[in-house]
Length: 322
Length: 256
Ligand SMILES: Cc1cc2nc3c(=O)[nH]c(=O)nc-3n(C[C@H](O)[C@H](O)[C@H](O)COP(=O)(O)OP(=O)(O)OC[C@H]3O[C@@H](n4cnc5c(N)ncnc54)[C@H](O)[C@@H]3O)c2cc1C
Image (tube, rainbow over the protein chains, first blue to last red):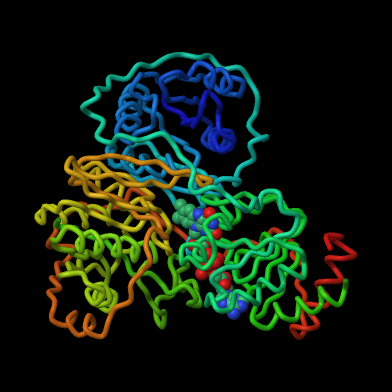
């Protein structure tokens, strides 16, 4: 087959948004490399999601089907794709950068003597792949130099799902040989954490606090601002990891997704895992002592300064304006 | 239980980052370094498992001479001994090359469990643990918040996206990458710091491990991200900036 291959992630017969973005990234790569593009869907029942994917501009959609692929396991997915690659020999394999992809693609790449270029935000001629370093403070340009297929996963939001071009692809089936004894992990069904008592998803105003707060003892300062604004309190992951605020107040890829009118980020650097959770916010304000903090790139308004000084001043100003 | 914890020393969070003259990496001189955050959680999980089940915790790291204090910190917190793969040009290797070095050092130890943090705060690739598992032919799981040792092997709690979780059973030995927040991190005690000075740190050179570390992926260039958004910055004293912001929020963005 050669060419570009996109590996689709699906749940309950539906293709994930991140997978459409991966198709858009794959099309970009296919144009740059002047190569055809195909996609695969893995699972026990892939008919529905394969049909969804076949509506895009792809040469072929392959259903890699096996009863042992019903639940995701690293061993199962690695074996299935390894066999498929041996038959079809793609030059580039593109994945959405999801938790599942993080879990098995480095293993798959290793098996073929390759290394994944993960969490890619841009693709340029070469091809050269851009990914973030230092938690988004720098960009790195990576070039594959290996001889096997080049593995790339793309960051959520970096490519636009609606830019994936439409078409009509042929659908085929590939049946890998997998035995139960080859799968060493036994995953359970998914479950939720403790019952939620705050619904940040519905809040109209949210004040988010990050590690810049330095100490739990400083939290009342932020609470006062939230109260003055009639806002809910949210946080970046470390604040919840430390137990300073409840887990349910965590905003980001492993926490809540918010869509308020106003989000104020205090002492939050703006790591991608936080940013994906705040994308739906109408107006974002960032207050950070580091003028180069990536959070400013996501903000409509910014103040560079020490939050210990700026927050009390802001609380006063909000009260005065009411 | 013999547990190996693979840790990495990374630039401290608040460190000023500058790009080096060649534009290929960051300027390392004058930089402060610390233990990678999720590796600290991996170490904590290992120490708690040892407290429950007995055994030994061995920390393993690849890096230049400067990693010494980070190794001592892990020993002071309670690790029993350390293996230091002396490797001056770590940033010239790709994830596969680094994992090959680590795997070569792990193999003769025959551990019951290998833990790492889920990703490093500098390169953020999140691959080392998974590659290590493949190189050692061990099962693995990633983004783990809690580890229970069972008769059959291990039962672990794995984080999924958007507040979901999953339990996974797997046989031991295995490799697990640990997510932050599963435990509360301990501090080194004065006694621990004193003891750490006498604990064994075995240094092996990358050359002695004789692995093929030729990269298949090369970091060609490092650059500052280009600003794409025109963020309105409000300046002046905290009081002035705050007043200006409230004006903007009220009359321009109309969200107050
Ligand atoms: C798989 C995975 C999932 C994750 N999920 C999430 C998630 O759901 N949500 C999430 O938030 N993170 C998540 N993370 C963690 C994420 O990568 C970052 O580590 C985290 O968001 C950083 O939090 P922070 O911005 O508060 O801390 P830091 O990155 O340490 O930033 C602190 C900021 O405060 C500023 N500051 C310091 N002092 C002051 C002061 N006095 N005044 C003003 N500013 C100050 C600093 O300049 C800095 O920008 C996840 C990571 C992984 C790997």
